[in-house]
Image 1 (cartoon, rainbow, N blue to C red):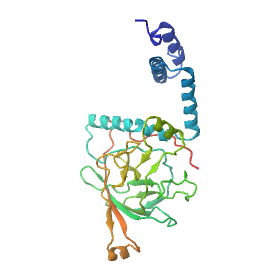
Image 2 (image 1 turned 30 degrees about the vertical axis):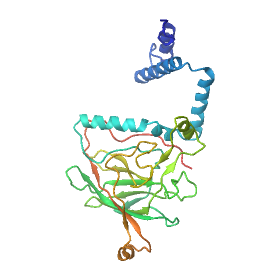
Image 3 (image 1 turned 135 degrees about the vertical axis):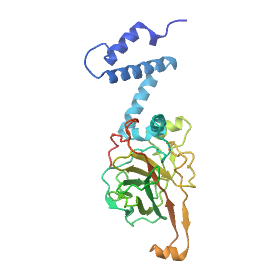
Image 4 (image 1 turned 180 degrees about the vertical axis):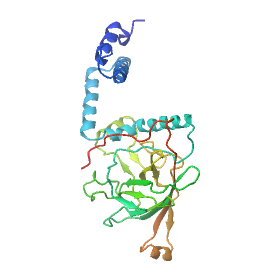
Length: 309
């Protein structure tokens, strides 16, 4: 059997030069990672007999993916963001951290700096019609103690699947708020039930999903960051029960424990008490945080986001 080109001395020497591992200076960890990535790519090219036109088609695809600001969309679509969560779950279990609210992916559409409210907030500005939803619950410790002054950072899509800042038809910070819990750890907000959304049908993410025979739909969901001094930051989202794609999320973000009951309220007296003239929905959900510890990786993730419009 002839030797693989990827295993030849010439290629090994090339990889050392490419990664800088044979030279002083630079970051050794980054050098080792680049060496591994490029070596694996060499092997893939060889194993699948990738031709130059196929290679440059892939390079062009990656260029278009970046130009379309869809890298953050494809990452969860390929399961990479879920894999990071799985690694964090495993690290916490090893450190003896169990229970609590499950984490799940952040997604690509967070915008920092949403208005901060005390205890309760209204997320929509009243300009859009839709099913009103009231969400409330507590932020507490694993042994049930309330966490006062925790910050519930919440954001979600509108009834057409669009997010403010990325959807120019919406006002600034629409459906985005930060809510500080009260002395009993309680938070509450009023909003409109969001819809799910799909990858842009003509975009590069959906183009690849089509080649994989996959759809690009997400179920309706509401994103959260939950943070409090002395506690591990929680990145999570709740999914709206009954959605067609609830258990078929292209981003693999649905997890047990993150599908609360959606209670529909049609009682006339209750509707009037809420100041409404039509039935509405209620969701109750508690967030359970773990105390910070040095025995598990940090949960505060520094990352850049796609530029908002």
